[in-house]
Length: 449
Image (cartoon, rainbow, N blue to C red):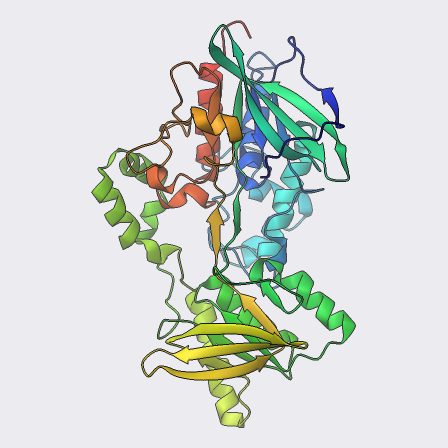
């Protein structure tokens, strides 16, 4: 989310006057705010309009999209289809994945697969199907450029959210709202000295960039992937299949890929009740829980993929042509370029021995990080209260604590791992969280609305 000031020559239009102030404007329209839009839409429908919450959502992309660059054809979800946009909140909702399958004519076929984990491309299609049904609540190609407090009689009662169309940046649209819900998602994380180029990319760009290379016929003799998590292993496998003549080197500091802990008891850290326990726990207990259960989500790989890569390596050894190379217990020390080549220096940590590789492609599968929500809200960020470690104070209803003179609300979907636990940025509690925010919005709406 970029929060820049519009130029002096910008043309401003007002979308919400005094008689049409929004109850909530959502910034970002990924799965989290999509789930909130559905929850508000369903609440209005059930009440026959009596409990209508006037909502609008702004998304800078021209259409709905969720990690499109990693929609590998055979990659599966890592959460159950029952943890869709609605089921954990309302199993009777017709926005569920099962209702999507019924409408697409694949319900019986999916059941016959005997799996809880759909293909990622199928789940993305489900998201698009759901987003199309609440299209009246969202404006695409709307990049939020500022959020400013509006004060009346010394009280901050509203926010003015200004957006622009990237194709027409001179035109600004302002919406006045009683609350905002920020769900701008995660942004790719790169090592401090990493510089993207035509041959150096983050794994979030994997599919389109590989597609360009294949269409252009660019020869790829060696590709290097840095990282030890699910995305890294998927990138290694995908590059190995996409470039059958290339050597693919996987570089990571561990001895081997760590299997994801998806055992029944460990998975209970993703239960809605676990959020209550985490939220109320002392700081040291929160840190312990986070450290104990990192292996459910961070820098871990599905066992099926680990075994498949291991089989591939063994088969290549048998055949005497080893293209898949695991450079474990290693780190990248230097990255440079020479013409179209990327020169990568890999250090084997136990001995300090270094090897320079000439690569045609370097992929950083180094994860994602939350956008600095508290720092990037401009003037509004100054109204937010912080704890002794300078982290945002967030209520159990996902509402940021603000100065006493602020009655307008800021809700967060993401960036709350320090208060709400591991599920802050995951799909596991998306439906439940949307229901909680929806209820809070309704409870805090002025009686005169």
